[in-house]
Image 1 (cartoon, rainbow, N blue to C red):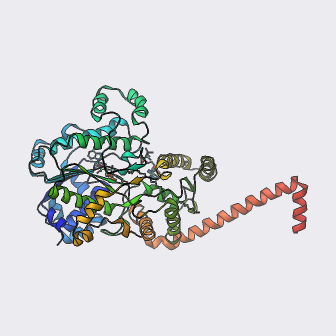
Image 2: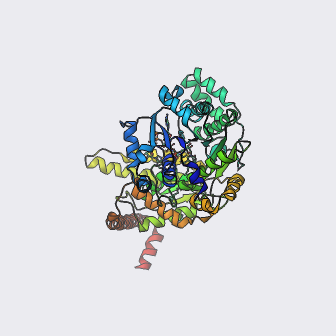
Image 3: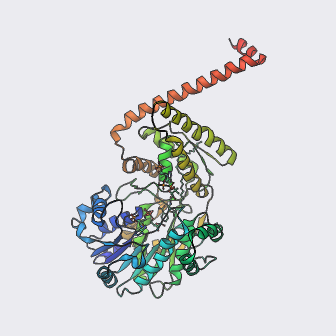
Length: 497
Ligand SMILES: CCCCCCCCCCCCCCCCCCCCCCCCCCCC(=O)SCCNC(=O)CCNC(=O)[C@H](O)C(C)(C)COP(=O)(O)OP(=O)(O)OC[C@H]1O[C@@H](n2cnc3c(N)ncnc32)[C@H](O)[C@@H]1OP(=O)(O)O
Ligand SMILES: NC(=O)C1=CN([C@@H]2O[C@H](COP(=O)(O)OP(=O)(O)OC[C@H]3O[C@@H](n4cnc5c(N)ncnc54)[C@H](OP(=O)(O)O)[C@@H]3O)[C@@H](O)[C@H]2O)C=CC1
């Protein structure tokens, strides 16, 4: 019997961000391995016209939870969705709900965050810093609390090259920032933001660093641990390979490439692609929850869950395998034939943007206009290029993360726990993982049917022929112009003839 699975039996667990990518996989694993847990409280806000209950039902009815329903048929009764908005004072939780949370919670997993790179400083601080502080305050009033697990990111200190499992101080105290945002107006905040975030590449990573400082400062006598995953990717093994449900990180790039929109990226091919499967992150989270509650380390431990130091894969290898998978399993209705390359030179990157991205978009928009339809490709392409430019920082650098605490924890687990809660990324076969990842993007994100593959392959063939025809026509036109103007070209031509 797994010690960790048994530990969660009978427990009341509070999860923030349970409707997000990581949160859903966390809930799934908890229910599947510890079906006798008492309750999972999730803090949810109504969204997109859906009530709390509708959101919960939608999650439970998804393919991700199919196995759970077999092991834990009463899963609906074990989830208690609590109305909460982490942007509000006291999270806008009702008095009764708050009372229940304070008196019953045993373990907290704090996953909620804004992960947008371009969020406003005010909103990102509210969610990634102030809400963390507020949750810690709540935690300090929970008599039965055994562990508080805070999810940060391996990139919270990406202004450093080598990152240890310690909390690094930020130049400006989080409290000062929280206080000043209360009275500064938005225009001034926009003006001072670049000065505040200094060498952090975006507001997201900066506010996650502030969030960690808050955890350190407000930890009181709580048992706290911080987990720092790198780029969280599709599931590796559990509950099945390739599950993914949002367009963040590599997912959007895979779609844009597979649909033939993105044909070149400014990337350093040999830089480490530090992707980590989401189920690996969740396994570590559950192991850390158990370890923190049972062993009660004297200080707040930080755990890195990254792949680069144990089983590195670079962007070149990843890109080649992604493209190879498109040959076998193409996406439906591509704009152009998927084919992309990496360029590390700014000039070449601008050239490709003009020739391979903007020009085809303009030509396509002209075609749409001529056929009486609304042009949209240029707009879409501009947004895509903006997105790609925001990700460029992360695909042109490599970092070293030390993993002493993660390795120590692995050695503390029984063989059974190492199997059930496997976070040993050395066992990951990248080629297999990437293929399943692309397949997962097709099935679960794009919701494309496997039955459509032969048709998609036919379309690819047609696009390839159009491509060859277009290039041949272009070549002939260029050659004809050359012959008309140059005696030497004419001589070569007659010689060949
Ligand atoms: C010789 C052979 C050579 C071989 C080479 C072959 C090369 C081929 C390449 C093939 C493919 C390779 C696959 C690998 C991919 C590599 C790139 C991976 C980059 C990963 C970097 C991630 C870094 C993460 C670091 C930190 C990790 C974390 O801690 S948190 C999680 C990360 N957070 C995010 O990812 C959020 C980022 N997103 C945002 O901040 C916002 O979405 C935005 C600011 C980017 C855009 O916001 P906007 O207001 O415009 O609106 P939004 O509604 O959000 O989206 C607008 C449109 O853009 C599309 N979109 C969004 N995100 C992405 C994305 N990641 N990729 C692509 N497209 C994206 C979205 O669909 C919208 O489209 P439309 O609706 O159609 O307009
Ligand atoms: N994805 C990645 O690559 C990485 C993620 N991380 C960290 O992991 C954690 C989870 O990320 P991920 O699951 O990918 O992110 P998602 O964007 O998928 O999920 C974010 C979650 O936070 C919730 N949330 C946001 N704002 C509020 C609010 N005002 N009130 C209540 N809930 C709110 C969202 O709820 P709603 O559904 O209502 O929007 C959602 O459940 C984050 O802390 C992130 O920093 C770290 C490294 C990499």
